[in-house]
Length: 412
Image (cartoon, rainbow, N blue to C red; front, side, top):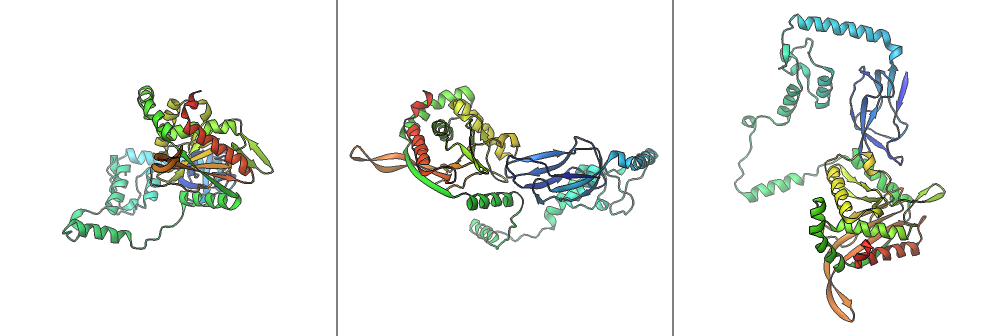
């Protein structure tokens, strides 16, 4: 018997959510065949079977949250179960012979043998569909994927003729009913990705002594630079330059000047990373994810624009892989698209600092003895005081401010 345990799927020891088993208990698996899908806070990973054999027992069910080294399943090696394989092969030959001989379609609700492939049986279990109640539309009454999904869909959405809906007389009444439906006191269980994110945030907030520094930036010059480069970059790469890419460029330059901020804690050691890999917090359907722009300090604004647009697109489609989110040394969380001036972001461990970005809006400020309306933006730098002292953190934040207020030095 082989103990199939949860492998390492992320840089840290983050827990993983069991998303889907591609095999059921009793199924045979081949070495290298995808056996189970798991999801960390960052991405979904496919885990392959390390050996060929029979999946005798699944220990971690779908929806369970497990850590590295946790027992997922028990696999009986192929050599140990050779006789069983021969028996199954013989049974398959008999079934094939009976099918060729002309089996009759199985009536819906029949308790006799149901003609369905292992995939269809797994799908039925996932959708909680009783195969005995499904009328097969395939050859010789065989149940198809469409048959199972149709039953599941009809169960969730009964025919309109059977529904009794009160007439809604006007839009105000409809709105009132919508608000009432939203205020029913629904209890939403914290599980899956939401649970993993919550655990990581609690761990970061409780283990790293967070200190937050705040600075205001006059974005007038950066706005002018963006307006000048918009048509140039769009023509070159097909994407519009945003302030996110400008901020990433400024941050990456500041990190090369202040390497103590581009660091992480590993036990009793502080690691000063030689590469500048900037993570970008993105709101995805399943929660917050942080794709990473590798070697951001070595890329121009056009390349950063292309990469950021591609990464955020993958994030919102839940198509990020672990490679897209590995190796980050610093994170940016940008809420500038909302009416948020400033906030205190939580460090994305094992990194030691994160930059929060607020909106750009006009504020009265003093300029050479006069009050002027200027486009101001607030930066909030949270850092781990075990790794970074206040003075280096302040110098780094000042450097980011200087680059954004004098953005033409980005191209020097």
